[in-house]
Image (cartoon, rainbow, N blue to C red; front, side, top):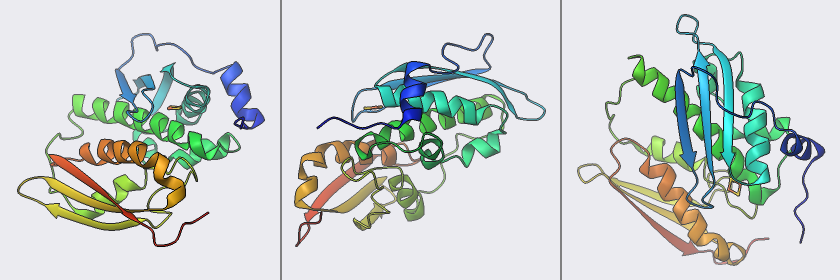
Length: 221
Ligand code: FES
């Protein structure tokens, strides 16, 4: 079945905005999605006084949605402060694009993650953020799971209420996560496991992520 995109997605794919690299960029960061292998790079010019994003460009090594979401991300990011970027969610991008097919939602997560990681890198370089690892806590794991989407429904695992259990072994840096899995989602289990590991592994203090799927008693549509 063909994937149906909004006119805005097609527009931004056909004529992406702010493609390339900002000349004399203050920071450049690349993020990749192990789920699909796509990658995206953002380069930014940030005013050190006001912390406003004065210029931002991207290079995409991915799908049409990756290009369209990156293009929209640059438009939304320009003129925002680093604090505002940190509060950006992938839904802000998809809303501005009049939606994305569920199976492509993760492309918008990748774009926002890459932008945030560029801002974080800039803050670390300017002594505004510390690399110091805070204690690993359950809320952080929970928060990370809000960025992991079910490719079938486009809902995050938290929204879909399928996170059954989270356990943390602080000393070992081990995180155990149990997810409810329905029949229809079985084919996406591997991709979801990779996404979960990628997002949770990125949390400070995490050494190992163990994901277990528990079968739903009833299949959901
Ligand atoms: Fe992976 Fe679009 S970013 S399929």
